Length: 230
Length: 148
Image 1 (tube, chains in turn blue, purple):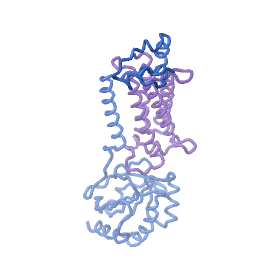
Image 2 (image 1 turned 30 degrees about the horizontal axis):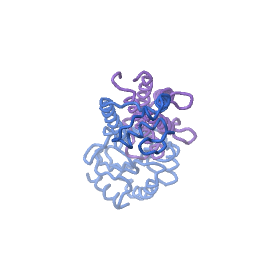
Image 3 (image 1 turned 90 degrees about the vertical axis):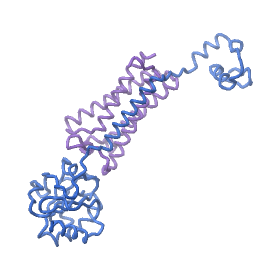
Image 4 (image 1 turned 135 degrees about the vertical axis):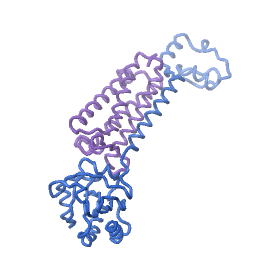
């Protein structure tokens, strides 16, 4: 430690030069008279030298940061993902395995209106909606095909066995399937469950509901009637 | 990069490491909250969800991405220490520590990428993004001792 020749505060030898420069910028201090040659050498050896960041470096780093941030944002927000069909557009085709065995292809329902539900076995809203849909199915099964497709969003991984168990326990007798490769999910732009599409007999989207139907059975009835009349 | 000083390279390592922390933290968060609307699925092959659903996404209930958070955080800390003028940490120089952790990160990233391509058969773009950050940091760490 050395006393500062200006203020008298005790300062580490290696910090004395910086202290004088920072605290007493207007004072002219000859450190050679305060420190011995050995102390100055030792101070130089101990004093951390911060590596210099150049202006050119800042420019390069700023560019890299902007590019990386853009790439990250694109990957996270994924503007290229499917937005799904809008009302009046044809519902995209897909083939997925069913919980009862075999596969189901959407176009095989052509000629009949379809209620297409994207769900998840572990989704609480889907479990509640199953009771509503069961009631709707009892009233519309003669004129509308029902199809529930698990997109496996939350909780334990949905398997065909788990979907079949869901179907049995909730008493929902229509076809349930698993979108294992997420082809249907991406094609329909499904990002939450349940998401329900109402298709007319030509496979054109009449309406779409994200989440539980706000009006319950009545809402389903209203849109299924429109799909039947379309 | 012959025109970048040692300080520039260290700052770049710090910036890339910070992105690595954010990226790995986002992947970790997504592992716990898979129903998010911002998940990076392009199709059946470029699918973060498919990788997330695989057995490789977690070890003992802990998401693999947490390793990335820790690794990038260590790289960030080392770069900041070096920028503050520290030269040695324990027996080794900071340059050597940076190189060691950058090598480890790139090694883990390469291994997980091989698993994605050949075992899971799906690519998680954000995981590849993290691997690219690892490689860039490794490249900078290799050149650090020669930088002025």
